Image 1 (cartoon, rainbow, N blue to C red):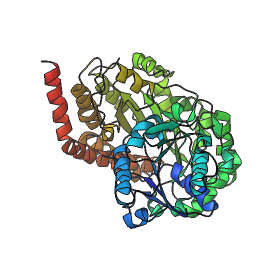
Image 2 (image 1 turned 120 degrees about the horizontal axis):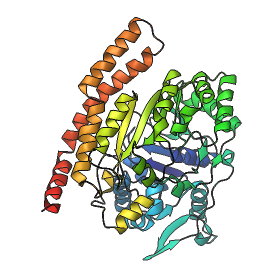
Image 3 (image 1 turned 45 degrees about the vertical axis):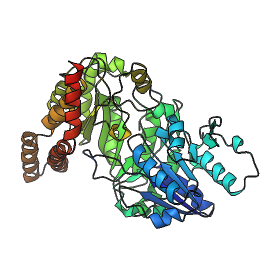
Image 4 (image 1 turned 180 degrees about the vertical axis):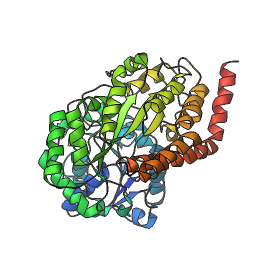
Length: 479
């Protein structure tokens, strides 16, 4: 078993950051582990390069990593492999199949690697090469023997993340197209957001790479990917604030000369010392999970954030010339038809740089999915629609059509309107003309607003049929 193909299927649809290529890190880490062991590895990231079927159908094993929205494409690929060369073992992994194992096994997968897959995947390949041991001893995998499905015990989480190699992007076709230097400094999340699958996948016990490891990884990846902006893939870059400060201090001390962005909680904006350290180390964009501007919805999401202090945090962050990408989730049982509009007004009033008004999506494995399924409120199991831009469940205080319209046809266009594009264009020109330090930020906001405005029009055009279906369903439901 020498030639191994790893595939990240393409995502359906598009959004404000569709033009950026940010592959998930699982496959590049697998690629590094396998090449260290002498295997020939090729990774296809479908958004960056088309699949080469001659290479795939002559390989010794194919691994496919999928999230929920890419599952239909993952299943199509698996089915095609099984049709034209059924002898090739197909292994699937990722959040979606971790929680819907039986579905994956019925859709072409011979094996499913559940949860953190590094150790399980390597052990499985060894077993396929030399089945002298019992497959039941491989933790964290599921498989079929005849018509019977077997689920081996859960794998143990990797405590020492530094034992993992740096991701190998060189085995990825067209890796030069990757938009950012991407790395992850931690796994797990101590919080319990109702709609999030992270804790179900990686647990609430947080594990960290050492600061030294991260510094060396940045240096290594800069040599591979060039002097591109760094994006920290951590679900929360500030789980351990003191450790993050130490990391930022080391970025400065090592003169890494990077621009970086990361996902954080709003509490980041209350620590002025931290924000100054972020700016000095090259921080220029924070992706902040505001989630909602409603106290009731905050409780419904199991979030513990102080909405009254949002403006204070936003001002503190902007004072350091750091841009804010606000992320909101609309559609909780406490939300009404006016919630999306109020969220857009809040975002404009507080001068967020860019936003995503995401629709609550019941991802398999989450409490939200289990609850809505039990209440028979999920209206579509077309996984390609599970992209946070389509309503796939029945809301409590409005119709599915009303939620779709208020979020994607009203709130998002309100923030990215022609008027807002014009205002940001004027602000950009003025700041350039008088050489304000913020001119680059204002120009980037203008470009993204204009781009997003065009993207919304495209989304509406592509999704007319879905909008019409929801409208008809609304009429039928209401008699």
